[in-house]
Each structure stands twice: as C-alpha cells, then as structure tokens.
Length: 150
Ligand SMILES: CC(C)(COP(=O)(O)OP(=O)(O)OC[C@H]1O[C@@H](n2cnc3c(N)ncnc32)[C@H](O)[C@@H]1OP(=O)(O)O)[C@@H](O)C(=O)NCCC(=O)NCCS
Picture 1 (spheres, rainbow, N blue to C red):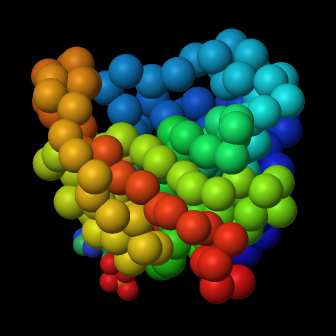
Picture 2: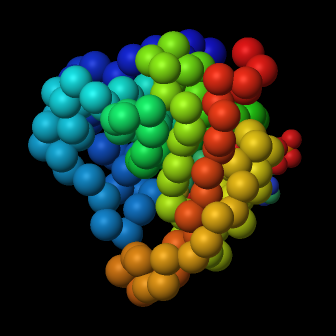
Picture 3: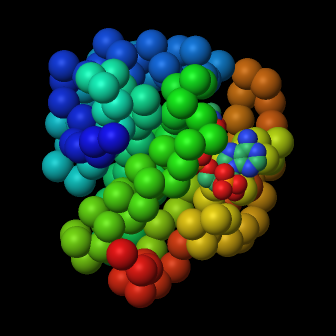
C-alpha cells in the first residue's frame, strides 16, 4: 500500500470512486481546481497500481478542514481509511496546523467511528447541512494535533 500526493493523472479513478460513493459527487474539474490551490493537500492510496482511496484537506491559519474522504467499496474495512487519514494528520502537523475539523452525515456511522478511532470528537450539529437527501451534519474536531502520535 502506497500513500502519496494525488496527481491529475489519478483523477479518472478518483472521480469514478467519487461517483459511486456520493450523491453529489465532485467533477474532475472541481478536483483539478482545488488541487491547484496552494493551501490544499490531496492524498491517494494506491494498491497494486489501483487507487483504493483518497482524501483532502484545506489548511489555513493553523486550522485544517478535511473533505472528500472515501475508500473504494471493495477495499473497505482494511484500515485503509485509518492509515490514509493518519498520513493526512501527519502532513498537517508538518505544515504547523494545530487542529483539524470536518462535517459528516449524522447517519454515517462507519465514518464517525473511523474519525473517533483517530481521536476526533463530536462538537455539534449543523442542521440540514446536506442535500440529496437532506440531513444534518455532525461537526467533529481533532485538537492539538501536534501531540498526535506518529
Ligand atoms: C468511512 C470510510 C472512509 C472508512 O474507510 P475504511 O478504510 O473502510 O475504514 P477503516 O478500515 O480504516 O476503519 C477504521 C476504523 O473505523 C471504524 N469503522 C470503519 N468502517 C466501519 C463500519 N462499516 N462499521 C463499523 N466501524 C467502522 C472501525 O472502528 C474501524 O476499525 P476496526 O476495523 O479495527 O474495527 C469508508 O467506509 C467510505 O469510503 N465510506 C463512504 C464515503 C464516506 O462516507 N466518506 C466520509 C464522508 S465524511
């Protein structure tokens, strides 16, 4: 398993996972534009030449906002999401970021359990944050990431 920075050549595979995973998927253009922003970092997990998962965050003013977390269906429950986010946290640490936050659908137990396994804590609810279908979000934070064990 190789965890590395996402490149534009990954986007066809990334978008295919994005489409099979989310009801409101990002397009290749969305990813391209976001990847070009200096404050944004995207990682992919590569297994035997295939993209198995990806994640990204926007880091600014000592805070990082995580989005686009997904693992391809057939690769789930093999700690890929955990390893990938651990790498993202280490990347954020190396950039001097102090804390990370994200939103997750309130019914998305697998993701909430993954984030909790990494030390994220629930900090509140954003009512009706999502569409397709309409649903509230749980806001989660991982504070003091500089103390996060490597
Ligand atoms: C959420 C997601 C990224 C998890 O990826 P994954 O690689 O399967 O997760 P991991 O194998 O690293 O799981 C790590 C821990 O998270 C928890 N977890 C993950 N998936 C779980 C599930 N389906 N049921 C219960 N616990 C789960 C467990 O504590 C697990 O540790 P364990 O296997 O030792 O019990 C994946 O399910 C996914 O892509 N879902 C669709 C997209 C999505 O919801 N993204 C998040 C948007 S905010």
